[in-house]
Amino acid sequence: MAATITSQKLQERYQAYISTLNAQDWDLLSTFLAQAVNHNGKILDHEGYRNLIPAETHFVVADLLVDSNVLQVASRLEIVVDGKQLTEHVFYRFNEDLKIERVWSIVQDGEATG
Image (cartoon, rainbow, N blue to C red; front, side, top):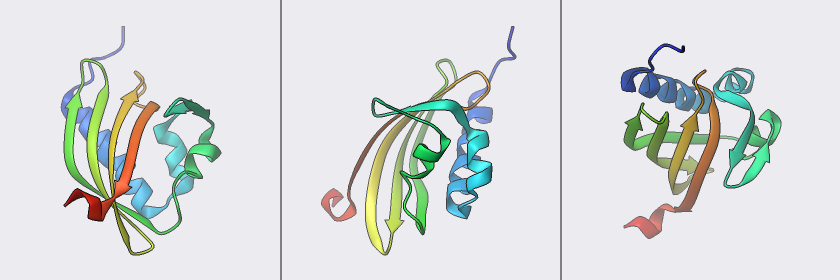
């Protein structure tokens, strides 16, 4: 039986994932991803997932909810892409190896949020 994954462990894993995105360490990114990731209903390999992220993108976690019982994270991210502000509302489901296996994401223009 797998060891219990705490909310703190899941939160730390997610924060490390965001740090990896911000560092644009694409080799390390694959350590956070399941073999295939379902992103908004589309199955992606690691390269396909990485290609979703424009160069020079910076992520800031504005809100974070973690549910270790179902290995899910909900986050509101403030994103800067080429000087443009965006907001992403995103849910992640992790597997028991703490790898992201499913992502539900909505991105909107940051100016539209207020």
